[in-house]
Length: 124
Image (cartoon, rainbow, N blue to C red; front, side, top):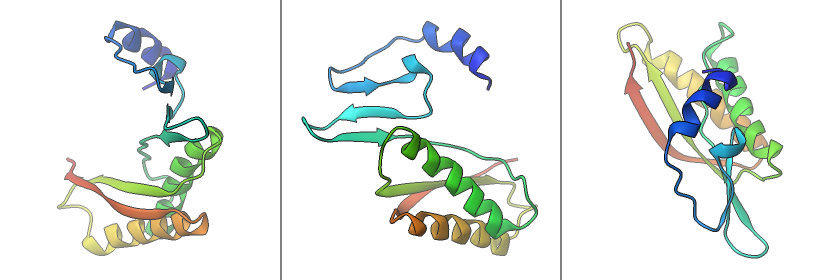
């Protein structure tokens, strides 16, 4: 969805922000920031990235780098991440999905980020 479309949709939603929310969807950033204490804040984001290359491992690396860049852009340091994948089960082989996930794991490891779980969905 374009940022222009988001600017039309998001203001219609009720906002429930605690006093420790530093960055929310109000700013149209790709991540939110929540203050943990006087010296630390938690940067959270979720991203979805459609394939732009034919090599599954490279695609996983690119998708992970794109997601990690949202954390870096907010001045954060990625500690943990979750995978989210959606593929048509009858069109994508498990071997391909494995290569994509391995690419993401490799990219996360480059910056010291642990992938600790995730979610998958059958996507038509």
